[in-house]
Image 1 (cartoon, rainbow over the protein chains, first blue to last red):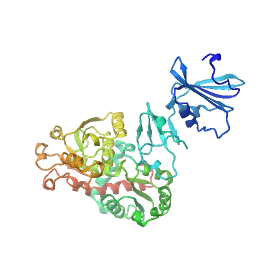
Image 2: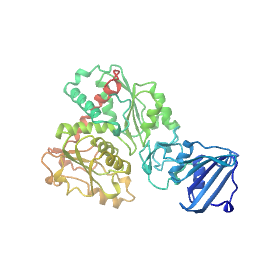
Image 3: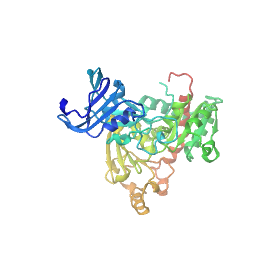
Image 4: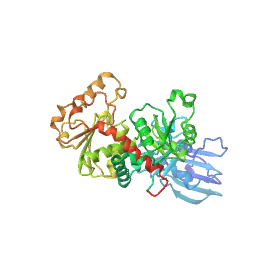
Length: 153
Length: 306
């Protein structure tokens, strides 16, 4: 996207998550646990043209540099995403997301009979297997639409 | 090696299984010699669902090792009724027992319980998940009857919700066994178990009818198809009837086919089969005691080097 097409202004410091699959920006924020109550400046651009993805979303989070482990979990729904760390309007670091080995406390298990859906002091825990994730408690495999299982809490 | 807990059959190697089965055979040969092997050990029984065979055989097993049990009793008469979490219950019972046997209606309950206590936890059934101690006695029974390598096993009935099936299928991947799964389409093995079997390179085939595969089988493991798994009675009657066996069915089988069943059965094995040489299910149930004695001996052993 050229500068004259920019829909939101550049940020001074923070993190820009680019090349998010179109329509998934809000899921990315949900995964990162950002809902606006933190007081961070957050800009979301959705479904803008992208050479690589056709349509993409962009998420800009001001004044917070997200760690690699924080953003890796984004790879589950946006494997093409790139993470840009911004300081004084300059990109100082650019990374791709990597598949994490486990996803803890983020997804809810779709098996209603799983112990993690009972009133027990336990966090959900999924291992990442190829393109799927698998509940370590009940072995249920989530194969598609992971975003539907993101626990908003 | 030493296992701290027995949660899932997937954690068992061939060496683990053979060690327990060898010990069970040793115990079976001379049970009296083990009468004080675990003198005064206390086994905590936490059964959140009804049980006859599993609970009674664990109870007998620890007593024959010189120990005793402390029993949570039924859910209705315990603090669970007051809303106590499983995590709290097992942490309390841990203080009264040297090991816990847990049956619970939720999948993953035993794994979670094991995260909260230091004493060994044995999964005696977690919903439609796993039932690994049943698997050990199933394997013991198979080994005693037909051996555990180079054989064909048919597993029939409710493969989707049958926890004994899930554990048995996964444990059998340690052996040279051809596994045939026979069920209605709606009760096929769950995705997670199929994934594990595929990953292990197991020889697996799925069938909707028994007829074609029966003559090849050395073992036929029958499980109950439960009425509540079907939306209506007619559909249940139609499906269940196709997976029942009687002496007529078994005419096409090998003479030494072993018919097994984790019990309780309802009508999936006709009582007429009981008096044939095929019937192995009562022997299987009796094996629960020596095998669970062997398992408890392992988990309670202080050597830590087994």
